[in-house]
Image 1: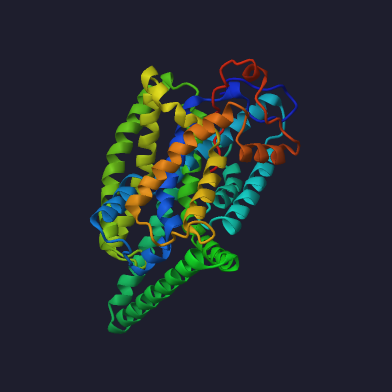
Image 2: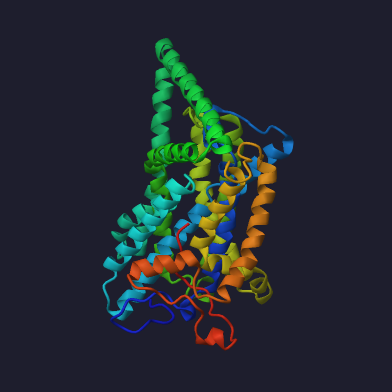
Length: 440
């Protein structure tokens, strides 16, 4: 399958407006909101350490409800959607390179290396919760699958999804076996208490650094948090790579180039995705209320299973629902504002980090540790509602978002044009969005 329009042969170029597929930019724009919704508690306080220590910092019913809803409807669903789009993007770029007769792999490797650089700057200088480094690193093994058959991609995706559950199951088995003896049970209890104490201390240290510290304090804490986050990469990598492969599968099937020809498939994905996704995430959301992430247990294994399969299923259900709604003209008009955010996905993702760290860290408003999940949801909505008109304003004047322009310029090793094209200058409609997914 070839993309809708191929550029002239022999010269690598970024995607043009005419080559864009609107539904993918809408999906990307939706994902940007979902990611912010999930990230807000981690911007606002030491949530990662609170979870490890079993600390409930905001106990009001509305904050507990907000946490539950985020887990049920958003957590794990939107970075997986971006992972799906990232894999689809590899297929689109590869197809365009083949149509030009140019080498794809060297260009894609440069693209990944630039993304890795942006991710490292983001993680160490802005916010430790970066996902771009993960995407960049996993883009390299994704290249190994670029020419595999669709059935092979599906088999690998399912196998990779099972890996985190397998890891957790083995850990649970080890804990259950150790608890069978009094000596082992005592050792497990001591380890648990030590982990809780460590996470409590880290949470307080985080509040001092981000809430009241100066720049060296913030920098040191951010480096510590980032390096700790990288230790969890092996556990997150299989599910991300699995979604990459599902995106590559969708590209090979031509689903988004010929939506009308794949309506039956999309409706099946909607039904199964929502059915399995809602059931799995109910298990996950309730299970999280009854277990501690730091201690493997049989109930924790069931909770993990609900998330392992429920999160990607609901993600695909969301994608199928949006794709079907986009086939209706009235819904298309309602959803199209999200496409502007999606066309500037990388810029908007980084902008969210800049805005939120300014709100919560001591060099800004210093609200770290003081804002609960419920007002956090409201803040996420406000930030996103500002990003929509801001993105529309920018794209009326420029072809790319600022970070998308930098990414392209460094990838192609030449300064890309940033201003709008001749059609835009004559007042014609701006070009439609593109099938090329950005990274989260």
